[in-house]
Image 1: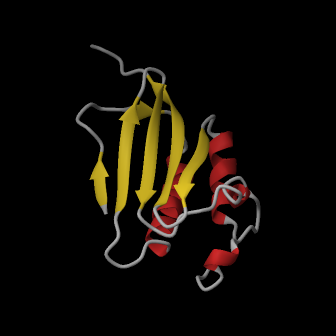
Image 2: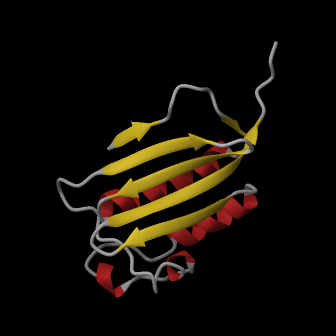
Length: 128
């Protein structure tokens, strides 16, 4: 697992416990669906008004036709039937992000891996 957060301090206004659930779910999924020897990369990127956190893996990937479904409650791809899970994690992640005035999206290619991105509104840092 590699983490790249840059050097500048970034503040977001969120419920830390809820956001921890989102990030832990994304990292756990990345590990679960990446074969031994693959990579999981966590990247934090600052924009003018928001902060993006990407969790990228070199795992099995998700077909384009299934990408919208992965955020549905209890959805499980046939490709992952041999792995544990009930299909609630990404649904809850999406609901948490909506409640925190953020959002989540996925970009993926079968056999090459996935990137799940979460977007948070940025909080301005007070200058003293």
